[in-house]
Image (cartoon, rainbow, N blue to C red):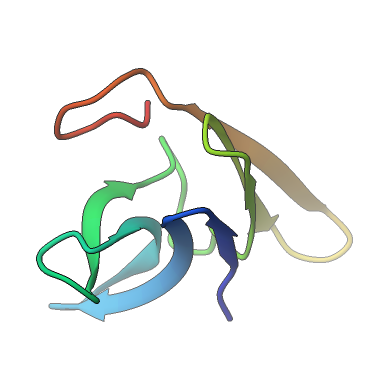
Length: 99
């Protein structure tokens, strides 16, 4: 599963990965024409601080161009289930404008 949010020429895309025995979730920030015309290049990767591999970070995403809300589910076993919303603000320009 993944989440997608689009605002103008910018897209946030929730992504699950499995690489070299590590699994997890992240959100990729993509911008139109980054890396060439017609390309949706990755400009930044957002990750949750202190989340486990069971966190569905990026399954639900919304943003307005200045603030991004990224939902996460923490499956701690039934009946204890929790969730969180991570807030990222655009702090300016440079290689990591989302903080």
